Image (tube, rainbow, N blue to C red; front, side):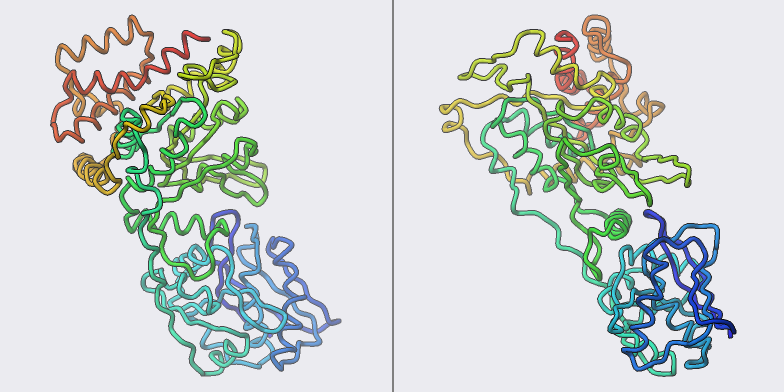
Amino acid sequence: MLARVRTAAMWGLEAFPVDCEVDVGPGLPGFAMVGLPDASAREARERLWPALRNAGLSPPERRVTVNLAPADRRKEGAAADLAVALALLVATEQGPPEPLAHAAVLGELALDGRVRGTRGTLALAEAVWRGGAHALVCAKEAAPEAALVEGLRVLAAGTLTEALGWLRGGSLPVASPAPADPHPDADHDLADVRGQALARRALEIAAAGAHHLLLVGPPGAGKSMLAARLPALLPPLDPAEALVVTRLHSASGLRPPGSGLMRRRPFRAPHHSLSRAGLIGGGSPPRPGELSLAHHGVLFLDEFAEYPRHLLDALREPLESGVVHLSRASGHTRFPARPLVVAAMNPCHCGWLGHPKRGCRCTSGDIARHTARVSGPILDRLDIQIEVPALTSAELLRASQGEASALVRERVLAARERQAARGVLNALLPNSALREHCALDAPAQRLVADAVDRGGMSARAVHRSLRVARTIADLAGEKRVSAQRLAEALQYRAYEGRAATAT
């Protein structure tokens, strides 16, 4: 006997519909699974047979062949366990095939017959919906996440026995979508930062226009504290962004089964000892790196100069395109990668260059080598580069409490509304649109000419400064980019010029 049931599988982050075909035929008892399953999928028999016995069912003493079609695409994980079990019961005439005609089945089987949720439930549910299924039977713990797919009727099964009861004409509870995560984020308020007016202003501009930011200063100056407060300045994820981010984190195994939509923007802060695959993505099956896990959120790269040079240079293309492309012998993979990058580094190897109380022990050669660890092309891609000085005790005690994150976020939201009318965030304005949206008068043009001819600023740096100036004008509610706004934007490239001089 032959039975078919719809399911889905993943390879890396990609989910796709799968037809699970089970044939029970004559021959010596055995179990074979074909269709390029990985090791965890091939181990299905070792889970199925105990699960069937513990559910009071008899595994067939015949030859069982399972085909996961399409047979030319690799598949990972145990999401097809429940589908194989139900198809096996239909093929051995222990259940009717009609309920499976328009339904899909997902779930891993425990040895005692319980149905477990799997990694990437949201992406898998979207895949079965694209494959034409109108209903989905899945693990009870994962059902609220699967129910996020609009139009898909999700039935929650806690055990194989419950799923078999549905197959034989019974009912299963219909799942409701899980509630979205609450928006942050009272734990990290910008009001906690004393002094550092320039850094606070830079943080506001970065949040308003999605500009990458570099903070340079000695240990204890507050770089990490500032970076941790950036997510609270950003607007919550809109529904489309939330769906993308939730799907990505679910497929990466970073969300508990059954979680709702992520409304908080992700904040990732990897250690500088991570590998290239850890930062960019890779492996087999391919997994996203920190750059993609921070998609639509904040990627904080502390100790920026301690990252290996080749690792930082690997960021160059993704920061421009917003996509990580991985080409391997097994295939080509794309991961989304559009985070707001905040990098922080010490001004020299010992860290105390420019400190008001502690003297720097580095030679000029040490400083040049430290600065050269971050290449010019990477600095070019960081729109805002500022120095965060250490405060003296008198400055720290005299400094008043700054604005709260909620007040700054109101200005950020207003600036983003102005950008929404143009259809794109300022950091992503194409060069062809700069002439229209960043038109310069004569004084502003002289500022640009001076920055290029005397300051040695590259064309890419000029374009990025124009985008920052556009954001500053948006924060002020101004339609045109004045020389005053451009001058402020150009001062945020001062560190790049000093770095070039040091090397």
